[in-house]
Amino acid sequence: MKWENTVRQLIIFILGTVEVFIGLRVLLRLLGANPLAPLANWVYQVSGWILYPFAGMFPSWRLTQSSVLETSSLFAMFFYAVSAYFVFEALAIFLGWTHGIMDIFEKRPLRSPNPLGQETKREERETKPL
Image (cartoon, rainbow, N blue to C red; front, side, top):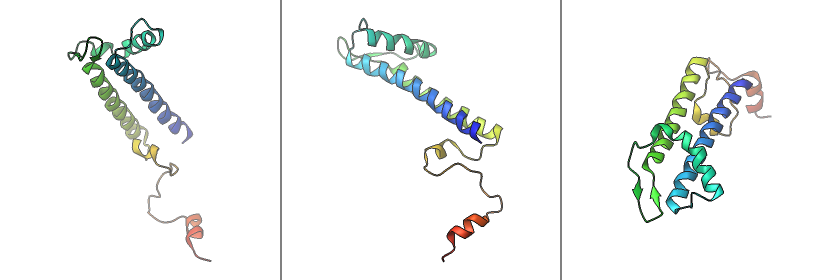
C-alpha cells in the first residue's frame, strides 16, 4: 500500500512540475518578458523540450509588440493533464487500486473498502455509545 501512494505522488509531482513550467512560459510570454533575461531564458529552455511535440500546432497571437499568447502551450497544458489522468486511471485498473485520482485530495486515509459492507469490530466499538 505504501508504494502505491508513492507512485500516485510521483505522478502528481511530475504533472505539477510540467504544468508549472508551461504556465510560467505562458505568463512570461504574455507579459513580454525579455528572453535574454536569465530567468526567462531558463524557463524558455526547460519548457521548450516539454512543448516540442506541440511546436507550431496552433498559431500564436501577438497582443502587443512584446506580448504573445501561445495557444500551443495552453493546449499542451490541457493535453498533459488529461494524459496524466489516463495514466493514473490505467495504473489504478491494472494494479487493482481501490481509489481513483480524486480520492488523493480528500482528507480521509486511503484504505480498501470492506467487501461485505459490514463494520469491523473496531468501527463497532468506536460507534457504540457508552
